[in-house]
Image (cartoon, rainbow, N blue to C red; front, side):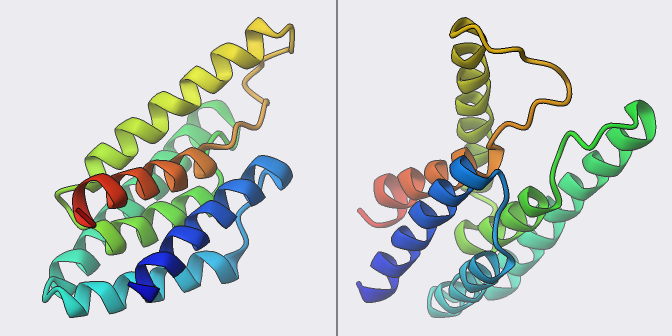
Length: 147
């Protein structure tokens, strides 16, 4: 119960930090990764969750490099890549697609509202994907894993 509260508070902290600073602190992402390893070990899903984190983090890293090579724009931050890898370790392969879907949809909605409010939205506009991934993870954990 204490670990669950720590994970949720860490996810909220990451979300607020990304909203405010548009970056994700390595120390907080590392702590989330470590807590993900601990909970996966407790649930006897350690190997599966580690593989999930590696695969999803690797895919996001590939997307980052591919888009940069095509458009010469860093559309995906390295903090987002590390965060989704840590989230993969935390939630496992069953929930990580849902986290990515919800986080991406929420980011698109944020961009839509940002544009509606009269702001200039360009390919260089930095959107807080990590914040929405963190909040989506918290929702998934509360709704599916902790109930």
